[in-house]
Image (cartoon, rainbow, N blue to C red; front, side, top):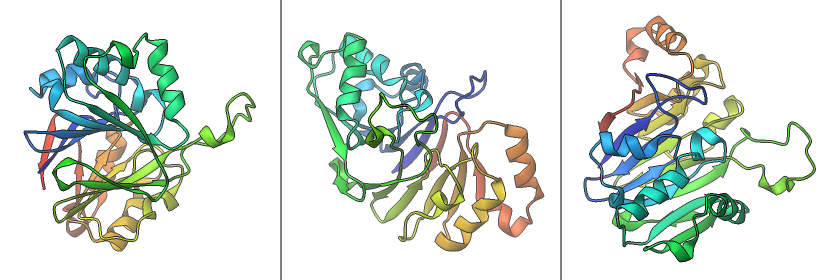
Amino acid sequence: MKIIFAGTGSGKASLTRENSSLLLGDDKSFILIDCGEGISKQLLQLDIPFDRIGAVVISHFHADHLAGLPGLITQMKLYGRKDDLQLFVPANLENTLNVILNSFFIFKEGLPFKLIINGINEGETVSLAGGMQFRGVRNSHINNKYNVDYVPEENFLSYSFLFSAGDKNIFYTADVGGSSDLLLFDEKADFIIAETTHIPHEKFLQMLVKYEPEKIILNHIDDENRTVNWLNSLDKKLKKYFTVAFDGMTLEI
């Protein structure tokens, strides 16, 4: 089992980092977790055929986590995919996703494979092929901060996820709204993939104390110098628990 970091950047365009997307699985089948812009090209660069993506899990609907999905589905069609594709989004957003895809003239009736959009209820355990499971918990990253009244209040959703693969637990923070979002799960986390854009880096030490992970991978990099400088400031005994992700990085678990 492995984690492949396809895109490790933040919402800012970068010449060295693509938007958020990572893969969990083996060489036969992968779950794609978030689907930032450019994911189709990233998969080609990683030599991962489009039909090896068995499911796509979306944490929230900001463009740097979702914008690559219409293009990816189009490439799957062009490359002749036949197997079903499962999409998982926070509950209440299924219809919104369908509208987004239809806006790109992607219709279920026009695909050579079955496209299944699933809403995930908070706290619900979802089982996938290969014995993998995951559970989503709402975090505070998205809220109606502009007080718009033309989008249903229940659509302002963002999830963090706990994935279970074999005997390993992987906590993916996705984007968070505050330090309390780093401590949403009670289970042990063997690996933590933590975003670095929206919170002070020293808050990651709380995760180290609570979860005692093998490794915390710093992801969603906005300011690489800030992240690297913080990491270099740590005592060696702490520093060994952290790794700064980069596009194409593979972690065996």
